[in-house]
Length: 88
Figure 1 (spheres, rainbow, N blue to C red):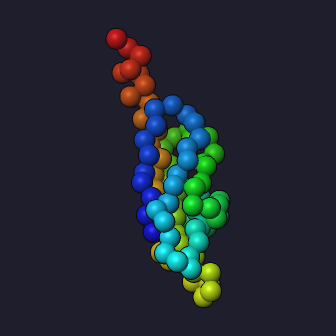
Figure 2: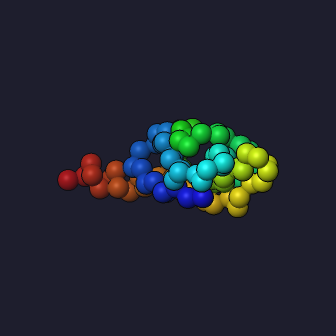
């Protein structure tokens, strides 16, 4: 599984989008603890991000019940970018 990491400059929620799963697989998004499932959709809207955070994505094989390896997907909060933009 894979999905691009995202960088943001202000606290906000973010839509993370997994690359298409192979036939017969669905999606599993997990919180930074890797255990708490957050979503089963291809697109996952995060809670409000107030600091950089890593979520995890796995594919779930519907007929066998097997779960792929969980891969990290980062949301990077870069407040320095906001400061540079507003100081001119």
